[in-house]
Length: 141
Image 1 (tube, rainbow, N blue to C red):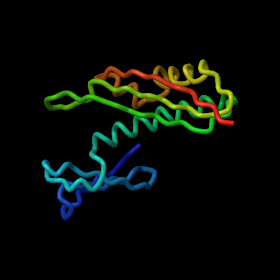
Image 2 (cartoon, rainbow, N blue to C red):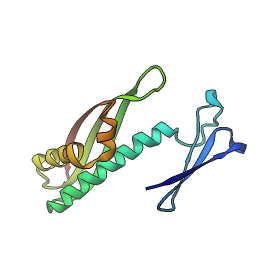
Image 3 (cartoon, rainbow, N blue to C red):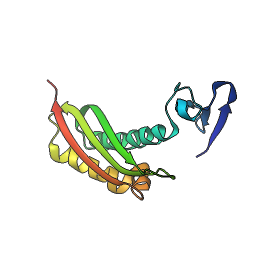
């Protein structure tokens, strides 16, 4: 896996990332750091990527279990260390899974498997942060 980051000097402290799969992502800094608040902060993208990684796992595990999953939302809240390096110290992930007759035990298992075995982002961040989870299952007609 690779990624190339280019500073866009005309934008203050904005950066363009081109991923190894050929996709572009823009990041920017806060105005107090020379940015213009035109895109997510780099650490926000780390948190978003972690949420995407675990959501991917949960949906895939449920689908492989032949569950009729229709939606999966993960709301992440976090805390960072007050001094540099400002690593994540706490991350909470609340999953909202929507589907038809999905047992809570299946969602609980999918979340646990993601966090204990499959989600490399969560497992990596778990080296500095206390990662906790919660979930709810919402049925659809």
